[in-house]
Image 1 (cartoon, helix red, strand yellow):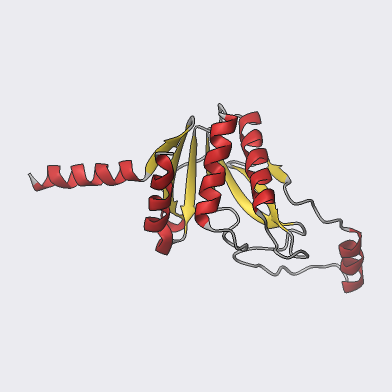
Image 2 (cartoon, one colour; image 1 turned 90 degrees about the vertical axis):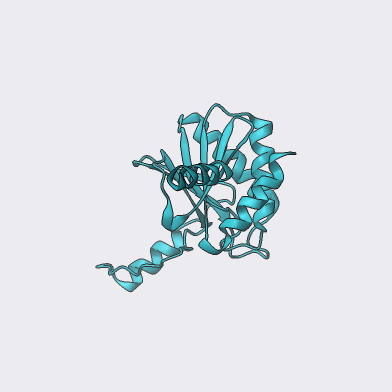
Length: 187
């Protein structure tokens, strides 16, 4: 009997981790316990492609002078752009931050990024995507603001794709984010 009770409790937890917003199922998990196979992964980045959660310094054969010339010729990307890399899974790099501005991220740019991101996922017919809580990693946008903007975009766009979005959150915020998503479930 305890086995059945444990299975029922486990199934109940899974149901709490997933809701439907518009036509899309939203699930929440921690990045280190990501149990899903997805068609695409979203990464957030700045206009110069400098930000990273785990910076890697690579050796180069180029001279210092050559590297400086390349850096001076490189033009920054525009906030709101999405770079799509055709890998498996596909990588969508959301240009969300501009470190030369204060604040480095805004709700307007985040809204633009979410809308363009949904368009790209729909255009490439990507059924499932994993993404962080955009705007909250390096920016100062509250997680619940991202959730509300995502909800509004999903309802307004009503896209055929993606069918599933997996939000990857820091381990300490899993319960908080589940609660925040649950708050928007009934809106």
